[in-house]
Length: 265
Image (tube, rainbow, N blue to C red; front, side, top):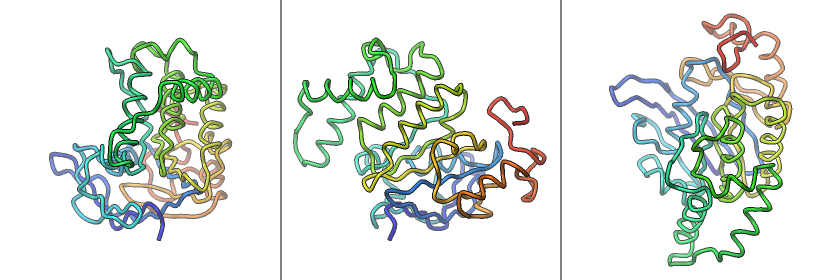
């Protein structure tokens, strides 16, 4: 049994429009699964449904974590049990400093695991925070600023991976984390993710462009078109997509993947 299992998962928007149309997926620790597909195929909807976003309703099927059905669980419960979502477009939270956000999140997870009040000591928190910030080349100055408020695109993505490094999830879902990054930022972000893949953590990397997979080698690649996984394979499948695109599966984007700006890659 894999740590995260999706069984025939269908997902609809609040107005009833079905976006995800029956997905089976099994992800374990120490594994990287790449989900690749064109814009508008439903990849982000799938990631939100896994994380428990209330605007995306699982209308059929099950989401299991460690064998337990979490299909109806709230996003907070899923996070406490080890799920993490890195957003394609991280939101700013004015009034909440990065340090405050991270300490609150860590303490919530520690409390759920310990069954009581067991906050992280301030010294331990600061040492780990600065260690991870230095590793990910996140400016120390950002720690005292409001979360993502006025951050550049690269800073937002690095802080997303900083959150992942601090929270130490069991399964991380990265929704087009490479979107909007220049090559230097991409190397740093991808390197940070790669270092965290271990017997304690697995990852789902959602993308429509293969460049992040040059730095995070996937164990499994899944082609996602029109709300479904239409083909699965090994790393060589990503190379095939880079060369031929999604046209084989009826992608409206032609015979090449497109980048986040909507231009041919």
